[in-house]
Amino acid sequence: MAGVPAPPFLARLEELRQRLAELERNGPEGRAELVQVRMELEEEAKRVTATLTPWQQCLLARHADRPHTLDYVRGLFTDWVELHGDRAFSDDPAIVAGFASFDGEAVAIVGHQKGRDTRDRLYRNFGQPRPDGYRKALRVMKLAEKFRRPVISFVDTPGAYPGLDAEERGQAEAIARNLREMAALTTPIVVCVTGEGGSGGALAIGVGDRILMLEHAVYSVISPEGCAAILWKDQSEVQRAASALRLTARDLLKLGVIDEIVPEPLGGAHMDPALAIRSVGSALRRALGELRRWRRTELPARRYAKFRAMGQFVER
Amino acid sequence: MVWFKRTDRDSRPTSRLPEGLWLKCEGCREILYRKDLERGLFVCPRCGHHHRISARTRLGHLFDDGKWRELFGSVFSTDPLSFVDSKPYAERLRALREKGVRCDALLVGLGKIKGRRAIVAAMEYAFMGGSMGSAVGEKLTRAIEQCLKSKLPLITVACSGGARMQEGVLSLMQMAKISAALARLHAAALPFLSVLTDPTTGGVTASFAMLGDLNIAEPGALIGFAGPRVIEQTIRQKLPEGFQRSEFLLEHGMLDLVVPRHELKETLARCLAHFS
Ligand SMILES: [Zn+2]
Image 1 (cartoon, each protein chain N blue to C red):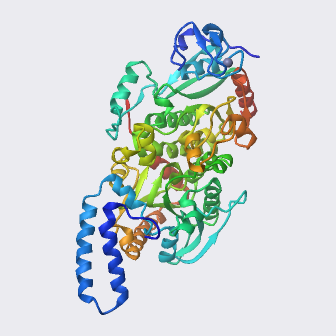
Image 2 (image 1 turned 45 degrees about the horizontal axis):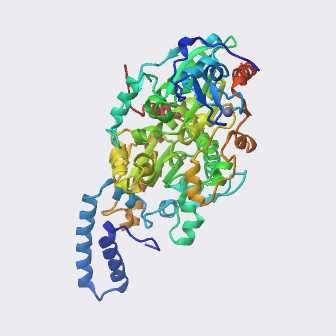
Image 3 (image 1 turned 60 degrees about the horizontal axis):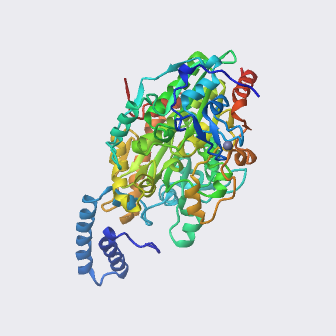
């Protein structure tokens, strides 16, 4: 894990994962150890996933070696053309957008992009977009509508960037506009939450007809850290906050916020990125297949009904 | 300056200001006579500070003769996550209800503004900081749908710290739900005027509050996506004076107008006339 220390509950698994990678590189000698390490690794991965707390789930969802948007693009799509800029102020590297072919069909792709090594992480601003990023995403989604291409959106962000310049240029307005415009887009939208679904910054590219979520991804109104600071006024309460927020994929399915959980390799997507990417690929294929049967003009009405039903309240 | 009469029926003291005959201005610390402050729509006659007012008082200010009919008043929050922080959420809700804040964090009213029928949805800060949960989302969505059905203009008055954490991701989804309804209002070319008051932050700003055909703020209101403290922690420096205040947003092109409370009704009526 380049430069990012693994959380303690993953330490043993990380050790085994690195050892296995070494052994696989080394070739025939050490075959016996290889078999041994594989077995141990499977055992440990099972143990870790079986005992995951919601807070550990958050840490797993943030694992730097999980596939990010451009990994999915490379693994599942061909003819990728990345497009840049919001035509107003800048090009935000925290969001990537463009067109590519998926099973021979042209699609638009938007997604948060996190870096892996320190330099890249800084360049991508840790996947925290500025308004320019959201406006770029909307521009590309509008192009998709114009040329009748479906949109695939990959969600993976700690949240919209809480910076001075972001506020100055209208972070709130950019997010709000995306919510309204995505609701009305007359082209299919498939959303896949691949890692962190961080609040409004995630939702800003997260309104769609099918919402998929990876098994170990999280999606929340606020980070457990933020929630602990505000409600408990104590950072050490992150574990309680993470549990209280109900932010795991299973919770979200129960709450009716997502449609489907995409299975991950044992121990998480970072354990076998290629397998995780294939798993996402088949879920996307299925979702797009279903949406292809809907008429373009009825998409907004169906999407409206979907989000209209979200929430729980009483009437007295 | 225009002064508006209000009937006392609708001005129950649900504002955040303490009770009593004399009050200290939150802006200039001057001691003021409550009746004077009330008559001045809770704007300090000395320094112009706009004190926070209850949703009920707001509707009284905006509707003709302070007369209006409440809509969707039966919708109330519940506790979908069984959320417990220092107190169970269910208990907080019960306590607020018993205290008489029955409108949840949003009060919706139908009435006339200078003779023109309109729906006004005003947030109630006294109800958990005006936070937006499922009930708020549902009431506002119904208000928008009612506007579509009856061809009415919509006015929202935001006053909120953002999404209600106690309802987790369901609160977050209210942003999408409301914005989707606003997309329909937009397509139907019905006017939507968004009024932003102190404070308007988080998920409320990042959904309906910034989506008005016109965005209009009261002077000096804190308006933003991230809170000032979070930003200071992120950039590790002090924020400039006046950052995220109405005047700052106006300067940066995020608002159409900054209007003092005494002129708000007049301005809204004039704008509605231009659009309908
Ligand atoms: Zn004063």
